[in-house]
Image (tube, rainbow, N blue to C red; front, side, top):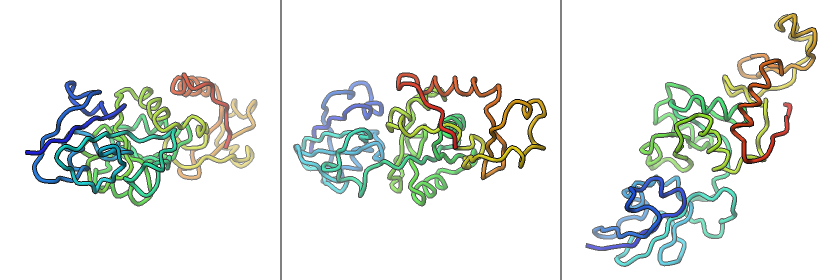
Amino acid sequence: MNRARFRFYAELNDFLPPERKKHAFDYVFNGTPGIKDAIEALGVPHVEVEVILANDSSVSFAYRLQDGDRIAVYPVFESLDVSPLVKLRPKPLRHTAFIADGHLRKLAHYLRLLGFDTLHENDYTDEEIVQIAARSGRIILTRDRMLLKNGAVTRGYWVRSIDPVQQAREIIHRFDLRSQVKLLTRCPTCNGVIVPVSKEDVLERIPPKTALWLDKYFICTGCGKLYWQGTHYPQIKGKIDTILRGSGSVEDVEP
């Protein structure tokens, strides 16, 4: 039997049992397994990993474990440039378009309100999610750890919180997206792009009382839904401010 000494850092500890969190522990193995298989056998999805050091040297997922190895495993770094160390994928994980699994409908809604391209359908199968993510370079958001262990997944994140507002705050913080927030640029219903529209062109769709005092309107290029900053807007803005609390205020950015 061979042994390697593992240490997982930061939020990767979320996947470990209490006795293995935040300190080094031994992993017993036979032969020379791939380090990717060992990491996932310990409970950590490979897509959560950005840097692996074996005996203080950066290695890729193709590295084969050796008896006596000292392994340090680090999470995806979104705010730091670690490109000289990254050997796990051809380019950093910085594409900020998402696909959310069927259980994250409200999270998808909030991310769209914040202006982020987020696909979601209640009936997506795991296979469809993986295929769509691979084809369009999207980050998979899920509460299902097993989905992220699919070998075809290269971009994904296990959402820790169960509350939708907290989930949205978690994503903004985790992927350092504060500077990319653009309110009212994505349709929360269908994910289509929202653009300005002439009041005259949609006058028949505007409630008469609203038309008397408001002149700016927007329309979704996907589903055709009409939007305006009416009496409901302060409530929406309050929800967004709650999501972004701690990151400073957000300026309204019109399409």
